[in-house]
Image (cartoon, rainbow, N blue to C red; front, side):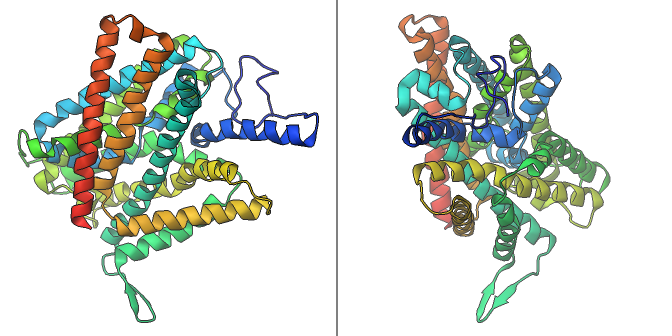
Length: 443
């Protein structure tokens, strides 16, 4: 295991070896290091790597694409149908704003070489409160995305096997609820694992899964009799808040960007890496939105896979690809949360047993939320409005203003950043309100 003290140009997300003066001092130092590691946990479990500053530009692009590519692609047609054709402009505006905020993260890290993770940026800007705020938004986002995975699995499996019911005594559990529980039981052993290397490799295929899904859905429309004949509407003002929120959910990878940047051998190319990642992902998201809306019009569901004719091969490829990734990514999402809880609630019991208890409780809680709030589109809209906009737009801008001192100069750049922050707050408030109203209205 390498230690950054041994190699200045290398960065490890693992706990370094510590030689303490006494037991109490050892525990204090270990706790401090572990706390920092937990907040960087999302990065580690995305790539499962002992990251050092020798990653090529190509690999950095791959890492960035995997971070940006996710289940949000399934909801872009629904977002377009909700807001109308003109709302596609908002996708490009959000892509531009989040790309710019990604550049601001790089500038923040250039100010202080000790900044290694996203929470470090919050700490550098606003102290411990800043670190805490960033960590909270990161962990809540991870929790709700993991919950969304269960909802997605239940919906798509019910679509494939529509007549499944499970009888437990006098209680009959419906198909979707049954599949949510079954998938949770399948996932449960993965959250007990200490080594997530295998799952990391599977989940790192996010960009490949997005391309396969896009290609399969295009084939369904072009060759399987569905066609691209729906005209849709130009704009639906009532649906704009939901559309913006769902678009924002597609660009929630900013907590990973500091790790991508730190890992690069040629850090001067980070801006170009971001440009490539955002351009390709935006192209994929926009293409999926257009294909899905032309195929199913206003009838497109919150996950386009639910509209696909399940008897067709191309449709099944898209659905099965959609089902595999969340199962692998679930453990990667909740493990940083488990580790954070372990740090805050230190126990004298067996660490292994204690970790399994926390992991199991966390899985059970996400199952309960998935069963009580089984609305994938509305939940992801809430995540996009409240968490993604905050973590990917508002916080990077505020942290940059504070770290760079730009707020004191009030130049053109400061005006632009403040405008982005104001718009971000507007989207967060309105989008969160609309999402909560939709969720409550359907309970």
